[in-house]
Image 1 (cartoon, one colour):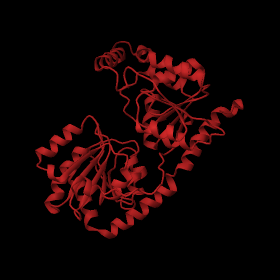
Image 2 (spheres, rainbow, N blue to C red):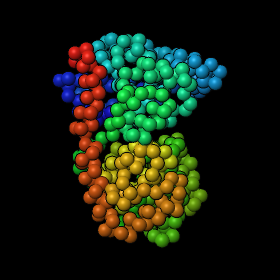
Image 3 (cartoon, one colour):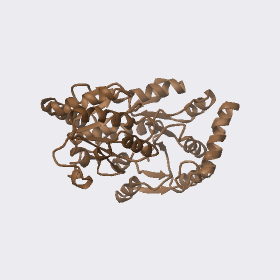
Image 4 (cartoon, rainbow, N blue to C red):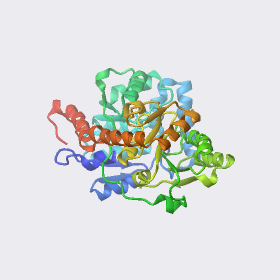
Length: 380
């Protein structure tokens, strides 16, 4: 989303971006001259009370079980302050189209605000963590959203089945990556990792489905053959403490580092010998592109949209999910085979350049906008 807003042709489309939390992305957009607004939301803002969040989510869950037809209304009601703030912003900024950046259930209050304002909606589907969607809620989403974009064919198929939408309403546009050179990061010195030892990297939030625990288990097998191997996790999230506890339980604390959130992911990946994406579920696997761009060989699980991004034995290695033994074997294979590493690095970088550059991504999204406005002869 940040890349899209930064690179849109502003003679035709002027982006206005709304967040519910301050993030580094907001700062980057402001630096690029994009108008950014931060609205408080009772569920998704970090400033929201835990009690209020639980109460509202409980209300939606109860509605889903007891009165399925009321789920859409209950969801809009619990976000009503944000919904009203969005409506006012749409008028003040003369917004002509809403592009929702996550998924339709999470973004429903924004979709309702757009409906009240009488403007079209693009729902950009990047997640399949939707829960059960009652038929009435699914129908309301399909009736209100003008066009859907999915970041992979896998994501598109899951949502088309869940919402019972016609194929013409869905456009698949893969994620993009800016191919700027990686700024060198001496992560070994920063983290006290000895020079010359094998370094395995993992980029991702610590949340359900990301699978960092499988990499920790695989590291036991890896160190049985390469006792000097180290691992570094880049990211943060609610499950980080549990993964750290598992590291301690296995006696791996001296071999594992946790950096927390770090914007220098490409530079860190470039300093690694292998990058691992151990997910149990993944709609796309953007960390794979970071590995390609950093010229670091990638091992990933063959789940969700990942096989659309990584070709086994060509641009990287695919392994089954939740299988530490296979994961460890693939990592050891890269550590032992410099020829395979060189071939996968070259093919991965070429794939990144040819399929995931920013310009064609922005052009494809702009075509979706154009198709929405063309019947009315409207410009934005």
